[in-house]
Amino acid sequence: MAHIAVGFLTLGIFALIYALPSWSWILMVFPVLASVTIARYRTVAGRDEVTARTLLGSRTVPWTRIEGLRFTRSSWARARLTDGSEITLPAVTFATLPLLTAASGGRVPNPYE
Image (cartoon, rainbow, N blue to C red; front, side):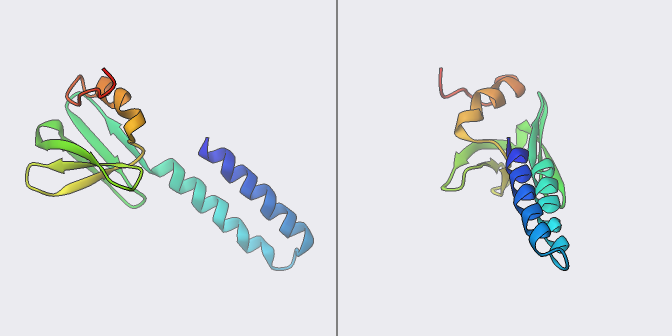
């Protein structure tokens, strides 16, 4: 769904390129960066571990090191680890917790049940 918004942004930039063809091609950097960011940010959960991918890296943590999840004003969940640190779980929202429950094999409780 987010890539559709990038498509509309690209169409708007094409209108600028048509109106000002000399310098406006540089604006095509923005849709490319947005698309790469959308494709890169994600959380991959399995039965034994969870991987949080960000723009420049990723971090894999076994479920045994996660004490719980919390939600702040930002839209993505944060996993609190046993050592007291936290990692952000991109694209995990309160609405997607049932999917995380299924992927984790029930390690994350489903709040809707």
